[in-house]
Every structure is written in structure tokens, then in C-alpha cells.
Image (cartoon, rainbow, N blue to C red; front, side, top):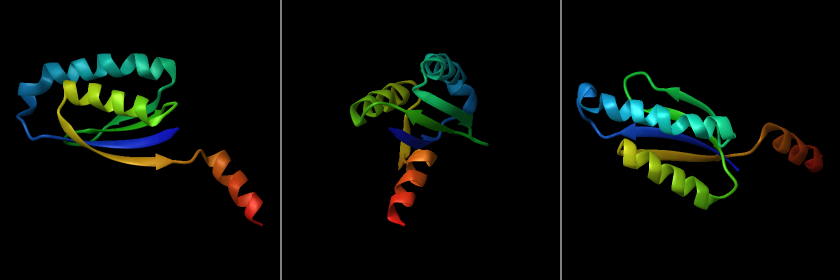
Length: 94
């Protein structure tokens, strides 16, 4: 299941969370390696945009909880459809 997640970290001085931001990158790397994260991009200013590819909602919930334990944030979450699946769905409509 694909989910686009955009984080909005709580406002803190960037220097006060520099170590936690480094922890975040160490946390996300194994998820990238395993394919649970297809891409991750730091946002200009603060926050990140991550494309998760997880088997179910519970796994996404676990990952967002882990993320928030490292960097407290609000998350905007958008369920997505793989482009090939969307095209196949549209093909059946015609």
C-alpha cells in the first residue's frame, strides 16, 4: 500500500534538534533498503516528504509512531494508487 506522508515538525530551534534529525536519517535508511520507503525528501525549512510502501495500515501506524518518537510532528497522510494499477482500473472503465 502506498502512502505519501508530509511531516510538519513542532517548532523548535533547528540546532536544538540536530542530533534527533541525524537519528531520523539513521532510522529511515533501513526502511529505504527494505523497500518500505520508496523515497524521502527533506522539505525546505523543516520537515520531510516520504513515500511509504507498506503492507497495511498497522505498519504505517507503527512507522509514523517511530518517526514521531524521533521528531515530534503532525503528519498529513495521503493514500495513493500505483500508476500501473490506476491505468488498469481506468482501462476497465472503458
